[in-house]
Image (tube, rainbow, N blue to C red; front, top):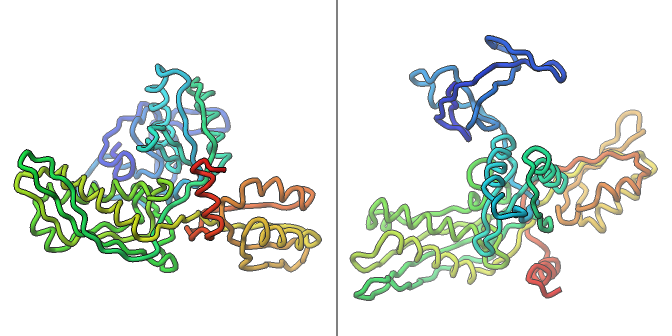
Length: 377
């Protein structure tokens, strides 16, 4: 089999068996004609969402079906193996889980050195940790689960930054950079569906003059440096979101390495973001609640009050026995809402939530978050 695109892009695999599943029983088959739902044993690098071809015929290597749209993780926690000797096994287990479930995100926090695991909710991460224990026999320590905020900027800033070139002869790398916010109302607040989640919503650019003056390798390091800096915001280290950064001028002494240019670009972007009135963004969820009419008032009051939500629509079916509430609310305020809803409605309501977009955190809430996450309260 040839995996075209996705996690196993361009990978050739040889399955050891094809199976059809009937309840808990797996039956081996010799072929799977069109329309068959089957399982393949022995695939090592194929990920959920990949398109599989029988063989990479000419012109079909780029064929790829839409796959699965993956929203960004909205909760994360730090994990570490109970013993250092188990760390390689933990890395391998997380890599296997990511192939199976592309909504799982794994990265190393550069500021703390911790291994961070992200998912679509508290329950999602709890199940993932349970699977590490039950399927891989790994004992891990997990930190507190937190909302995956983003950071953005409020104003446009153009500045020139200078950085030591590290050459024996001395000299400086001088970079002129401009950063500006993108309008969240124009779709910049929506999360990327593919690619690296950390900085996918930041536009990185270099002017034509810069592209002409730098070699391809130097330009690559320049853009990579900007992407690396955009993965860690100025306020709390969350990824930058809904912003554009463009380098308009680069001046460096002869002999300056591409790596030095990349490091200078990263530092220039970080300085510009810090001067551009940084702000926190929080994930906002689409919320749908179905409840009996007698509980509607309590549900609406809870959503628009303690949960900081806004009701968009009320749907009443023809029999008028149950009401459907469509709303949007910040994820941070919805933690524990399922339990609260059961209490409000005597267990007669149903709830569904999915990611909608990122929105600016209210100033009072942001100040409280900054104090809390910096350890002052």
